[in-house]
Length: 162
Image (tube, rainbow, N blue to C red; front, side, top):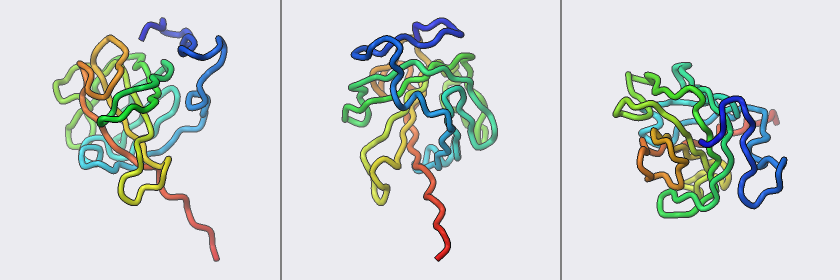
Protein backbone atom coordinates (compact mmCIF):
# COMPACT_ATOMS: atom_id res chain seq x y z
CA UNK A 1 0.00 0.00 0.00
CA UNK A 2 2.55 2.54 -1.05
CA UNK A 3 5.42 0.73 0.67
CA UNK A 4 7.95 -1.15 -1.40
CA UNK A 5 8.29 -4.81 -0.52
CA UNK A 6 10.99 -5.31 2.08
CA UNK A 7 10.83 -1.72 3.35
CA UNK A 8 9.44 -0.73 6.71
CA UNK A 9 6.15 1.18 6.48
CA UNK A 10 6.42 4.95 6.71
CA UNK A 11 5.11 6.92 9.67
CA UNK A 12 1.39 7.11 10.15
CA UNK A 13 0.00 10.66 9.96
CA UNK A 14 0.22 12.28 13.38
CA UNK A 15 3.19 10.19 14.48
CA UNK A 16 6.79 11.16 14.65
CA UNK A 17 9.15 9.30 12.27
CA UNK A 18 10.42 6.08 13.77
CA UNK A 19 7.40 5.72 16.05
CA UNK A 20 5.48 2.50 15.34
CA UNK A 21 1.86 2.15 16.49
CA UNK A 22 1.52 -0.08 19.56
CA UNK A 23 -0.68 -2.73 17.84
CA UNK A 24 2.07 -3.30 15.26
CA UNK A 25 4.71 -3.95 17.93
CA UNK A 26 3.08 -7.12 19.26
CA UNK A 27 5.49 -9.89 18.24
CA UNK A 28 3.25 -12.61 19.64
CA UNK A 29 0.59 -13.98 17.31
CA UNK A 30 -3.04 -13.69 18.43
CA UNK A 31 -5.39 -16.63 18.00
CA UNK A 32 -8.96 -15.62 17.23
CA UNK A 33 -12.02 -17.84 17.48
CA UNK A 34 -14.72 -17.30 14.84
CA UNK A 35 -17.79 -15.52 16.18
CA UNK A 36 -19.83 -14.69 13.07
CA UNK A 37 -21.48 -17.36 10.94
CA UNK A 38 -19.35 -16.25 7.99
CA UNK A 39 -16.10 -16.62 9.95
CA UNK A 40 -17.19 -20.04 11.24
CA UNK A 41 -18.02 -21.25 7.73
CA UNK A 42 -15.10 -19.78 5.77
CA UNK A 43 -12.03 -19.14 7.94
CA UNK A 44 -12.52 -20.99 11.22
CA UNK A 45 -9.97 -20.14 13.91
CA UNK A 46 -7.26 -17.81 12.65
CA UNK A 47 -3.84 -16.81 13.91
CA UNK A 48 -2.72 -13.26 13.18
CA UNK A 49 0.94 -12.34 13.45
CA UNK A 50 2.51 -9.11 12.14
CA UNK A 51 3.90 -11.06 9.16
CA UNK A 52 1.23 -13.70 8.45
CA UNK A 53 -2.41 -14.68 8.83
CA UNK A 54 -3.03 -18.42 9.11
CA UNK A 55 -6.48 -19.94 8.74
CA UNK A 56 -7.98 -23.07 10.34
CA UNK A 57 -7.03 -25.29 7.38
CA UNK A 58 -3.39 -24.02 7.64
CA UNK A 59 -3.64 -21.90 4.46
CA UNK A 60 -2.00 -18.52 5.00
CA UNK A 61 -1.20 -15.13 3.53
CA UNK A 62 2.10 -13.31 4.09
CA UNK A 63 1.54 -9.82 5.52
CA UNK A 64 3.42 -6.59 6.05
CA UNK A 65 2.17 -3.95 8.53
CA UNK A 66 1.02 -0.87 6.61
CA UNK A 67 0.04 1.47 9.48
CA UNK A 68 -3.22 2.46 11.06
CA UNK A 69 -6.33 4.05 9.61
CA UNK A 70 -7.95 6.38 12.13
CA UNK A 71 -11.61 6.92 11.32
CA UNK A 72 -11.98 3.62 9.43
CA UNK A 73 -15.73 3.23 8.78
CA UNK A 74 -16.97 -0.15 9.99
CA UNK A 75 -20.62 -1.02 10.54
CA UNK A 76 -21.58 2.66 10.71
CA UNK A 77 -18.95 3.56 13.32
CA UNK A 78 -15.52 5.15 13.09
CA UNK A 79 -12.79 2.93 14.53
CA UNK A 80 -9.02 2.76 14.32
CA UNK A 81 -8.03 -0.16 12.12
CA UNK A 82 -4.61 -1.71 11.66
CA UNK A 83 -3.87 -2.20 7.99
CA UNK A 84 -1.77 -5.02 6.55
CA UNK A 85 -0.55 -5.31 2.99
CA UNK A 86 -0.61 -8.85 1.60
CA UNK A 87 2.94 -9.21 0.29
CA UNK A 88 2.04 -11.99 -2.14
CA UNK A 89 -1.58 -11.30 -3.13
CA UNK A 90 -3.66 -14.45 -3.21
CA UNK A 91 -7.02 -15.91 -2.28
CA UNK A 92 -6.38 -19.36 -0.81
CA UNK A 93 -9.00 -22.07 -0.56
CA UNK A 94 -10.27 -22.16 3.02
CA UNK A 95 -12.83 -24.30 4.86
CA UNK A 96 -15.35 -26.19 2.73
CA UNK A 97 -13.78 -24.75 -0.43
CA UNK A 98 -14.64 -21.17 0.58
CA UNK A 99 -12.43 -18.14 0.05
CA UNK A 100 -12.11 -14.73 1.73
CA UNK A 101 -13.22 -13.18 -1.54
CA UNK A 102 -15.87 -15.25 -3.32
CA UNK A 103 -15.12 -13.61 -6.69
CA UNK A 104 -11.70 -15.31 -6.72
CA UNK A 105 -9.71 -12.07 -6.96
CA UNK A 106 -6.46 -11.91 -4.97
CA UNK A 107 -6.52 -10.32 -1.52
CA UNK A 108 -4.20 -7.28 -1.43
CA UNK A 109 -4.98 -5.78 1.99
CA UNK A 110 -6.47 -6.79 5.33
CA UNK A 111 -7.80 -4.39 7.95
CA UNK A 112 -8.36 -5.47 11.56
CA UNK A 113 -9.99 -3.59 14.42
CA UNK A 114 -11.66 -4.02 17.80
CA UNK A 115 -15.42 -3.63 17.42
CA UNK A 116 -17.71 -2.51 20.23
CA UNK A 117 -18.67 -5.43 22.53
CA UNK A 118 -21.43 -7.69 21.18
CA UNK A 119 -23.54 -9.89 23.45
CA UNK A 120 -21.43 -11.43 26.22
CA UNK A 121 -18.12 -10.40 24.66
CA UNK A 122 -16.01 -8.41 27.11
CA UNK A 123 -14.70 -5.02 25.93
CA UNK A 124 -11.49 -5.47 23.94
CA UNK A 125 -12.10 -9.20 23.33
CA UNK A 126 -13.77 -8.91 19.92
CA UNK A 127 -11.89 -8.61 16.65
CA UNK A 128 -13.11 -7.82 13.15
CA UNK A 129 -11.31 -8.40 9.88
CA UNK A 130 -12.06 -7.14 6.37
CA UNK A 131 -10.25 -8.31 3.25
CA UNK A 132 -9.78 -6.16 0.14
CA UNK A 133 -8.83 -6.82 -3.47
CA UNK A 134 -8.30 -3.19 -4.50
CA UNK A 135 -4.95 -1.46 -4.84
CA UNK A 136 -5.94 1.72 -2.93
CA UNK A 137 -5.58 1.63 0.87
CA UNK A 138 -9.06 1.06 2.33
CA UNK A 139 -10.75 3.69 4.50
CA UNK A 140 -13.79 1.61 5.41
CA UNK A 141 -15.13 -1.94 5.46
CA UNK A 142 -17.43 -1.23 2.51
CA UNK A 143 -14.79 0.34 0.23
CA UNK A 144 -14.55 -0.85 -3.39
CA UNK A 145 -12.80 -4.20 -3.48
CA UNK A 146 -14.18 -5.25 -0.08
CA UNK A 147 -14.77 -8.99 0.21
CA UNK A 148 -16.70 -8.80 3.46
CA UNK A 149 -16.22 -8.57 7.18
CA UNK A 150 -15.52 -11.45 9.54
CA UNK A 151 -16.00 -11.30 13.34
CA UNK A 152 -13.89 -13.09 15.93
CA UNK A 153 -13.17 -13.15 19.64
CA UNK A 154 -10.07 -13.88 21.63
CA UNK A 155 -10.27 -17.30 23.33
CA UNK A 156 -11.24 -17.27 26.98
CA UNK A 157 -8.25 -17.33 29.31
CA UNK A 158 -7.75 -20.73 30.94
CA UNK A 159 -8.95 -20.82 34.52
CA UNK A 160 -6.52 -21.77 37.26
CA UNK A 161 -7.12 -24.55 39.76
CA UNK A 162 -8.96 -23.76 42.92
